[in-house]
Image (tube, rainbow, N blue to C red; front, top):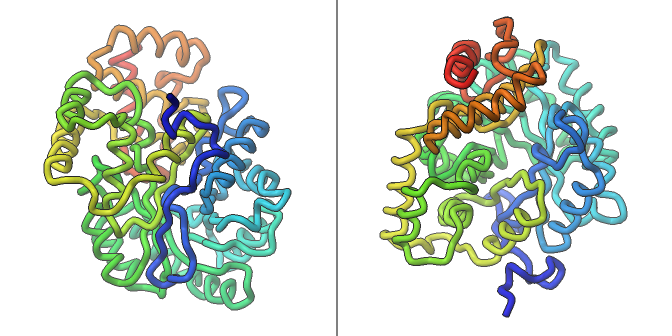
Length: 393
């Protein structure tokens, strides 16, 4: 007898919905489709497999997902044009479309208008429903204020090119509080998962935003996939004590959605089995549903990982492209894999076969430093690359 998650997507009931405090009449699916990790045809991020990616996105929408998130730099600048094409045939009218202004590329007051108009063309739409200032931190917030970014948001809201204004954030708690107070935001997007309770905005930021009436979108709910697949035996043992037939990914999703303050959580899905599982959980998860015992287990898992993760990389890819061709997120992912699974020998073999052989390993780094200001996690990338090659090379 098949379970609900085994059924074809079109036979499933829809996901659950929540609303932003300042936009109460607009239901938003608690699962959002993030377009940063779409299926690709080859090793580079720009080569999106449009056939597979379009099918995945449309299947998600057909199953009830109505929030689609992209950004100017995703997939080497190809995500926005792809989304514009994928939302043809009536799909654009069925979703809330979100994209982000690349604040890290803004150098003059006119850049705000220039980027927005370019994004509207790339998305082939006359408006963006949810427009975010991308990856704010303390320094970029000062740039926003100095170069008239808030006035540009007001103009775009006034003339209808954007409907709702928000920001995504990768910075300190103090900077987060300052940004929250600096504008009439309708929503914000923060990194939030069962590991990152005290990282960047974290749980305190989630609660602060909610107290200000600012709705919260969770990004990296599975920590770049870290919380989903190939869990080490101690973690599987911890979850098994919960007595539930849930996968590690389902535990992680339920933890995020257990927080009523989270309106939607974004998943960068690139395979149908990921979409199917995420939809199944999104059809069942409720705020406050986890017991104290289950929350305690989540805390144990958090401690296990935080004691072992070597590099706090989420594989967001903001550090790319590297001028020397180093696949920085792949290198860091292998370092963490070796640490968490105690698999240095096996991981070293993969590192040599996949990265060194193609000239994309850490030893290709020329230490130019272009990547470091772009990293949302403030990783000292050059130092860590040297250490990574010593470990795996």
